[in-house]
Amino acid sequence: MNIGFLGAGTVTGTFGRHLISAGHTIVISNSRGPETLADFVAALGPNATAGTRQQAVACDMVILATNWVNVPAALRDIEWGGRILIDATNAHMDPKPDISLAGVTRSRAALKGRTSGEIVAEMAPGARLVKSISNVPMEWIQDFSPQKPRTVIFTSGDDQAAKQMVIELINSLGFVAIDLGSLAVGGAMHEVGAPLSGLDFHFVRRLR
Image 1 (cartoon, rainbow, N blue to C red):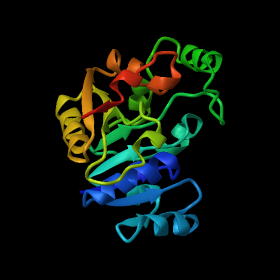
Image 2: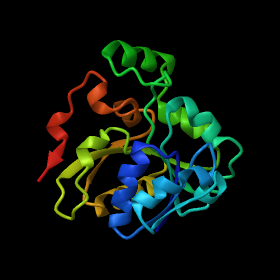
Image 3: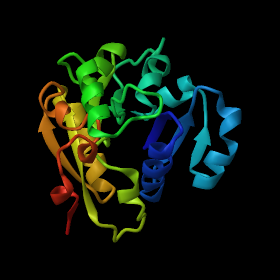
Image 4: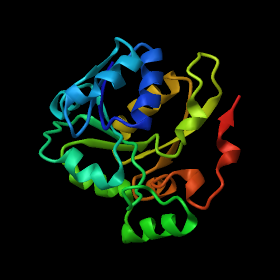
């Protein structure tokens, strides 16, 4: 499968490597243009290429992996045409996320009772939005071997078929996708990252 990324940070570098290890190819885009990504894609190897936002969105599946404050710009003027968009963002309102309890509380209050997944779905009309990958600190999944621990990844969405495809992809990488239900209900469990939300989900970190 060819998978596009909107954003070129830690999530893209880490989860992208897992995708490549499983035989997928990835197209990475950012706000500054593909010419700025030469070193980033070189570190990931020949199955990673740099592209424009349009080239990333033309892939079979797309992962939104920007800071929350950059989400509107990343999604602006894109024709989704029914493609699956995985929302891997955490809804921190500050350019540099404040992961203290007070910071997380402030960020959640700014959503005004909605989930970040619902908001992203509205900003990406025509996309089949699935919330996933956002509950896992990337330092937990630095083992790229086939024998890596089976880390839990929460997944939510209103499009059942799209959600099932994302679950199957995540499981195929050696992780364990847990279906939390809809964007409105399940999405609230992983919109700012589980271990940063004041809830301790370390007990579901790994399954063997």
